Image (cartoon, rainbow, N blue to C red; front, top):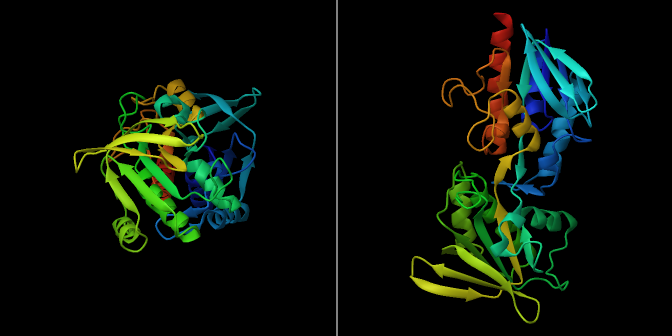
Length: 337
């Protein structure tokens, strides 16, 4: 029997490998030119600071060792069911048929230019967490003037838990990512002052709370409960931020060398398109499943399944577990078909 998997990120590859080992014929479609786009733009992963590149290579190794047919630069723009067969159509009008389909189209980072009050793309010195990851990858942590930053501020919940941006949900990984990046920065530049502004800290996973304590106790990173209301340029081209320490009830002004916006997750273009196409779109455009507890990999259509961050924000371990669960459900469905 044939299975079509749309998306060659962590969820798509893990499910493909699992199902291939069970003897199914797998076709894997990926709109980019390579696997794991969202993982490749990371340097180190929380909470153990393992190398993202190493994980990418492991995924590619597992994919290579199995009998799986991957198609790159292949964007799926249509998906329909005819009786028991699913038919996907790509942007070149090529069609692919399968007995079951797994949606693993993932997420896209929130576009920080939508939060104009923070000046991303307008002021020098305002960057996103992904921009900082790129600096780590290039081993070049500098401000707009090419200097090692003496003071860095991180702002949580940019594009998440934010009614103005239309995303009331939590993106789950931003809090721990800021802690991880702050420690990375301190290891590179011990004299840099680092401040993390937060609404409340959500340390979801094992080892996360310990990393948060380590950031304070071993690295001297400051945590300020409060939102930054706005950022503006100073006369000398730096950034001035206005905020409030809500625990102390005091207004704050600060002039950091870098302001790092911790951008959340949104459904990718492919996720939104296919969710709409299959009438499986939830409130924010993620892929909707039957039930988040008992049937979280199944959709309202027989033979159509979903896994990973196409459904909601998840960490990598959560994505992998979700992909394996989807593989079990697909196997059960095909055996009973």
